[in-house]
Image (tube, rainbow, N blue to C red; front, side):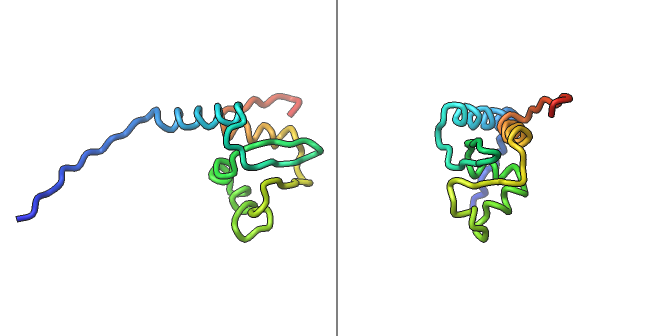
Length: 102
């Protein structure tokens, strides 16, 4: 006779928030940053996997079939620094401030 394993489901509603906080702290402290995004002569540092997981644009751009997917530093000539910086900050915080200047 075979025994059935008991099933236990654990769900922590705070986990995703804590994970995001940890990634933001790592970014703020320069830990594990493996992507430099250069735009308008300025550089935004980030975690490649975080940016790719958060944006279908970056997932396609940094995928294995694109030359940028093999580079640790990419140049984005068609974008502006400030909105891109705000987007990357949003990815790490789930918060954005929009006013007349942006």
